[in-house]
Image (cartoon, rainbow, N blue to C red):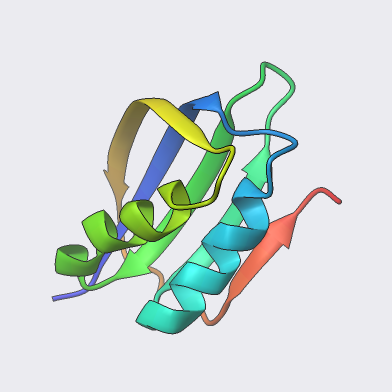
Length: 91
């Protein structure tokens, strides 16, 4: 089934290409959602799709040279039947 989940990611996740790696990885895995930097230094990532792929998504993001994920909190949300593609928010 389809799951929609919002993650708050902490660590060295801003200024290291995290959002663009997330967009690329989500596209490769066929996941939908968005990613955005927050003012407190964390990144919010909302992803929808097969939850079996979510771990793979974070593995692919973490392979980025300077990215260091030290914390991951999440909450499940109602799936959005209209959510398509994966975008980077807040340029």
